[in-house]
Image 1: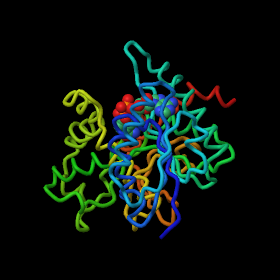
Image 2: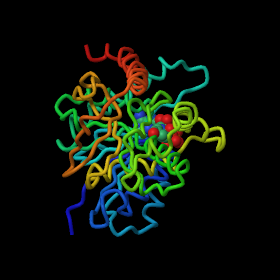
Image 3: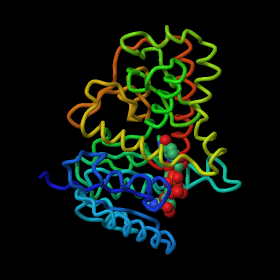
Image 4: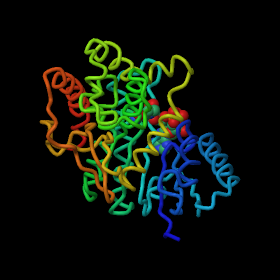
Length: 328
Ligand code: NAX
């Protein structure tokens, strides 16, 4: 049996946490042969801590063979101690009347503290996924607050957007999701994201040629994927939770275990590829192998795509400008 690995999850008593923890503990994220220790963080508020204890009781009651131990805490230095994986799900939601700028600043506080704690106590190889919104900028803040860890260890979740795009393409073409290869989503996890099926294939055939409908791309596909989160809130009265947890599992599983040559989308600190300034936490097409990701290179960016990429990049740069004073 392998040695257990430590998986930290923040916001563990929230909606996404409730869909996520049981799947991590059952081996769906890191493999059915990988024992795990869960280190769960919640805010120091009695109600949240009580709810966390309830979730831990349920984890106990599943008697998962791979679950070696569960720690519940309100201290990031405990939650991230020696963590091999960290899923940062907890974030400050937008309250009534709260401006976007206030939301950024409130979350900046959280992700500065958590980045510092990761820097101080986590494994030097920790793989960090930020889910809590605004996910890209929160991931950027955590990365900048952890100067002793490699920047490449910090990522943001674009996988839900990627999965949403896959299903829209599957519905349009009438083909199974599993047969769609080489799709990606560029940019920010926000309605400005650019879901791109220009390179996608189904059984070796070009999806762009199969669909052959730029009007559908611009006026149906992109708005449907971009505004999917809002549509789910409208329908369910609550934001996406099970699908978000599923995407987090997909993201971490592929990063840890490899994507077998398939393209997946990850929000990662740019290395300057495709003209995205270095350090910007941007959704890119990547392949993964041996615990590392590589940006897919050499893709042609046409005028329409460049316009969309600029739009989502500008939004990220604006977010970065609003919090960069923290690091100057
Ligand atoms: P919930 O409000 O149900 O749960 C969040 C939990 O985080 C709460 O229990 C809260 O007490 C806790 N929390 C807040 N601040 C914390 C801190 N500093 N340390 C530890 N715990 C903290 O939200 P949920 O539906 O679970 O969503 C969590 C986050 O995911 C939100 O920011 C949401 O916007 C974001 N999402 C991101 C997605 C993505 O694709 N990147 C998609 C789904 C989701 O919207």
